Length: 105
Image (cartoon, rainbow, N blue to C red; front, side, top):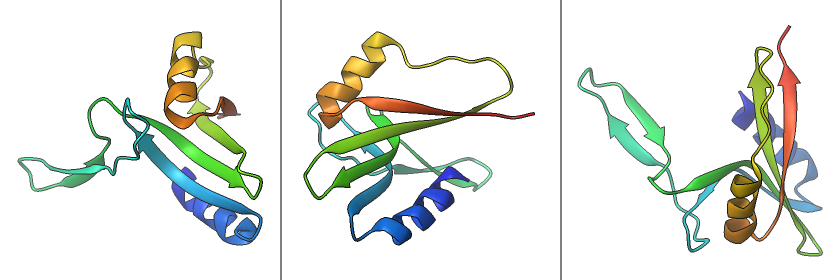
């Protein structure tokens, strides 16, 4: 759901920002693609590489400043990113992450 929304947003503001959705980075900061996993039933799913962390939305402005957004949908249990997890984002993306929270009614 969020990826489709993010892609539409990216098309609207592409002139001012570079937009990436579901970007995963390893411990060196390198961008890593999702891997294709095939289950015994034949069902296939793209999953993050082990050891990576992902930002739901990465916006980079013309000035080179990057903003990360972690989109959260939950049913009432609110949990934001821990300080240690925030440090991981800072070291891998060279940017801090902001939680965007949507509470389902």
